[in-house]
Amino acid sequence: MFSVQHNLAAINSNRQLGITTNGVKVSTERLSSGYRINRAADDAAGLTISEKMRSQIRGLTQASANAQDGISLVQIAEGALTEVHDMLQRSNELAIKASNGTLTEADRTAIDKELTELKDEIDRTAQSTEFNTLKLFPDNGLSPRSASVMETYHYEFSYNLTDNTFSIGRLENAGAAARGADGAVSTGSVLADKIANEFVPNAVTQILDAFPSLKNAVGSNTINMALDVSFVDGPGSTLAYAQYTYKTNSGQVTSMLLKVDATDFNDKDALGTGSKAEVLESTLAHELMHSVMQYTMPKQMNGKPGSLPNWFVEGTAQLAGGGFPTGWNNGLQNIAKGLADENDTSADANISKYLKSYTVSGRPYGHGYLAAAYAGYLANGKGAVTGANIAAGMDNILSDILNGKSFGAALKDNTGLTESQLNSLFSNGNADLVDFVRKLSVASLGGAGSVITPSLATGGTDILGDTATVAPFQIDPSKVFVDLESGGANVTLHIGAAAEHYMKLNLYQMDSKALGIENTSMTTQNAARESIEIFQQAIGYVSSVRSYYGAAQNRLEHTIANLDNVVENTTAAESRIRDTDMATEMVRFTNKQILLQAGQSMLAQANQQPSMLLSLIG
Image 1 (tube, rainbow, N blue to C red):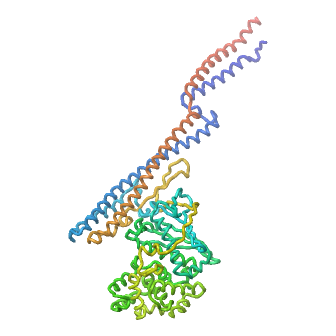
Image 2: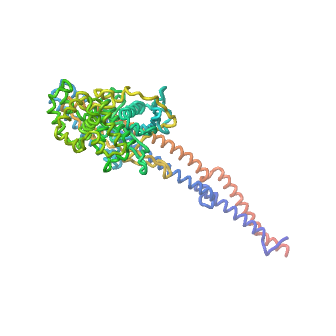
Image 3: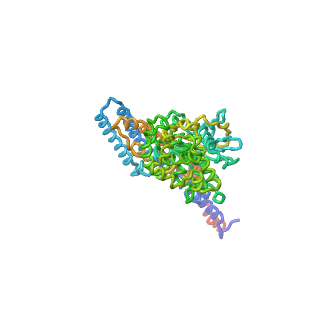
């Protein structure tokens, strides 16, 4: 059939030519841009996936740059610490040099001048080291002696008074803490394990044996407590402390914690060979006496009006720990040093002067110890001045308090003295009190012995020694825990494409005060000798911080390698979605060009068909 009204062949050819022309246009666009997707219409789903990948790629690329900036920051900090290390090593060298007896005072003065310059340079380095104007050792930074570079060893105890057994364990998440044949926990810290496995069980056992009323107050219950050996506030300040919580409705203690500052003690101290071995055991016994009293009489130990006075609380704790290792009655010890025996009255005038030089409430550890010991002595009928007799008398006072008497009534009923009268004996240099203190001084290391030991003359590292019979340990393997605490100033490095992908880099104080070397001196032989340990500790602090930064740099380098790998492979995946396959597209473009030429030819022929029909009419 032939028609001139509708040239269907031309219409069809034109439609096909239009399709081919659009195909050539798309191929041309793809070949010229290099992208398979130039607009959402090209591949709507593919565009969504591609843009999401692009966001990740660009974010990770920037994160990699951020991590590299973090490495630069760490390297600047570590470079500064390298110089601080060198200066501390030189300071330690000077301290050892100045400790030698062959030097004169003038020599030591010259050495001290160099030390002063070194400390000033350490301070200047701490103040001026910056990255992009950001101070790397800010005043609000972490202490180099802080828990961020020290592990916190946390233990839980359960003391069963029914069978006198201790259950000792560590909390969760510590991995494989070793356990010996005797059940003792071994975490790798000699100090922490010694305190947990020996000192705490021994001290609690000895305290409860010395003060039966406290043990009876616990009854058949199980005493639960925890121990932290960790950073508290750095060397030379708080050695240890006890704390507790209790139910306000019943007054029953629910949890107790003994915290020991690991910056004040070391492994040698725990083994009895360090310079603070005696202080360690004395401090632990003191704080554990607090713990037992807190457990058995929380209402009287809460510090509120009507509770036990501070001198009695601290003085009674000193009865357990003894004041000799911590030096609270060194002055009395020096006064009584030359006494022949307890009846030698030659030093009584000086003892009286010593007693009158302080108030009991104003010196709760030293005079508080003497007042508590004297109260125990009176409460037991003025027998021989021995630890057992003093403890027995103090136990009478504690028993009355536990049975509901006020402190004032318990003191008066057992000693015949009011608190005010007891205080006045000190301020008046009472002869009977002087006689007691003299006898105590002879028997107890200058009036500072521990009453929980078999003899007041036994002190120091023997306070918590093998004198107590401690039941075998029981271990709960499920209780294991090691934590790494942190806080203070830090830099947040964003090292990922998501909001939560960041790491915190701690910043530290690094001046002479933070390192604990501020007051070191080389002007005397003794001062220089004391400085040696201080500088060696400071070297260790800086080493810990440098190790932290070194570990952080290694982490960031691994982070960069991982980020770059993710960027590379995500880019490859995104390319397969978004980019043009040039070879395939050229084949398609060539095909479309041939079809375009053919379509143009066919359209031309179709348009000639009407004129061809005129030959039929003519």
